[in-house]
Image (cartoon, rainbow, N blue to C red; front, side, top):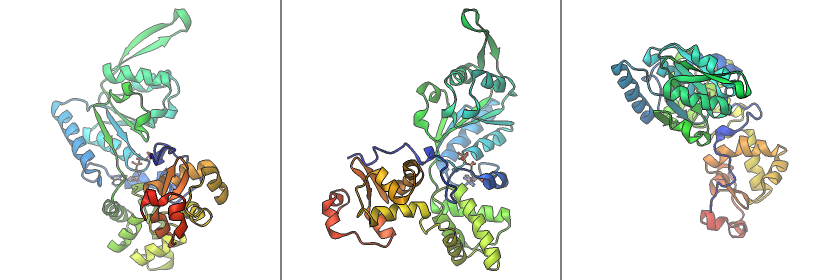
Length: 362
Ligand SMILES: Nc1ncnc2c1ncn2[C@@H]1O[C@H](COP(=O)(O)OP(=O)(O)OP(=O)(O)O)[C@@H](O)[C@H]1O
């Protein structure tokens, strides 16, 4: 059985949804603080060992040849460090960086204007590259390969293509959905890196580093507590750290211990595994009202009083990733881990009755 056949491709595809402390997209406060927390070079960048090692080789080799680095494609969920890494690439190459995004480039002319104003060796960071318009994408093919674009002047039969030479540049494309990129675009990147979710130990290092920069007193156990609730994502880890810091200042002596972190995140309704109120509402309805499923998505959404899309795209991806919920052709079902997480015991007859025994064992 394909358990995930009704799934959208990644969490990353999710709409922003309700404002959530554990949402992976940047909010206003993140945007303001993140600049100060970004690692400045590959040494400071925590985790992603394989990506770092490979990228280090690519950049060193280019530097040794005195050449511009190959184009780089970074894929992975929001908040894992793609923007940070693009800035590091520019810094390591001693090059300036220009930042834009796919949705901002609707016409080929928009892209031509950016490309033609690049300096030699400049890094162009193109976030959400999968959301660029088709004509712009086609212009990018030639720009990446030949450092040249054809600017079309006029319309209809009288239109002429004026070739425009570009200085060599490095394109760093970022996408949450590498599978959506057309192969001709993907093939034009010399180096492709997939960023994984971070292990709790790595997040602890991110949190310690950020605490140092923010001048927050943090005990090792406190960092571990925050890391365990950060859903594998540095952006969320940094955000939870800031909320726990507030609590520690107001309710205690400012020092973040395990107990303080746990109390603070309890106030914000982020549980020990990083689930928030919405996630738990979905799981609770699935277990209490539908005996663990299977239940259709629309029914589940009505039961929690949310839109179908909110349940499917905001809550479910993390629950699936955590192995708490499975999507099957017959509907959503809770896994044994979901019962355990909410401290409930599955009703005996459900195990055979809804097929969970066959799927999950006794
Ligand atoms: N490996 C890391 N080490 C330390 N901090 C990190 C790391 N990765 C990300 N961060 C921090 O997490 C925050 C989010 O990172 P960043 O903006 O680079 O993510 P992103 O993948 O580009 O997200 P989006 O796709 O939403 O733009 C930043 O504050 C950054 O400093």
